[in-house]
Length: 182
Image 1 (tube, rainbow, N blue to C red):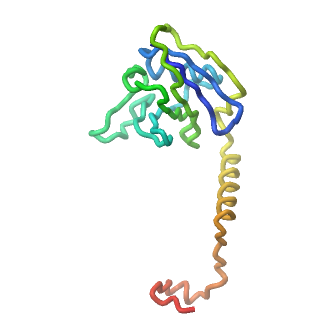
Image 2 (image 1 turned 90 degrees about the vertical axis):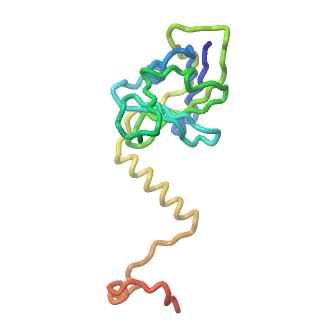
């Protein structure tokens, strides 16, 4: 059986890829097909996360065992996990985190299951738009985060506290939340 996945990015609006891969291929083969389709290097740590319908992450499929799972959690390694072991239904949502430092990822969905076909190697059947850069300058990332935080504060109408509004004695003694008389 062949799975057809569609990938999109929340960073680049006109970017998408479609990957067709045999259901018996591994998550490592899917990873490599994705990275090749976007011209990313393969020397970074990344992971797949199976997601629910609201894109909340559930099971993780890792490149390497990092030793961070508790004993009651299943360990899924890309190299030894066939896609068919964890993916059974059209519409399955998956997040592929390609940049752990900034949690950047591709959002994937299983668009079609084709039972009458098989593939030896995965193929990219559709390339639309330019992929986001694999690596970003952390200074640029920090500026974007600061800008987003400022916009959020403006949206919820919170003003920063002016430290000069309090005298040193109040600050030294702490605040008595039970005595809030103006």
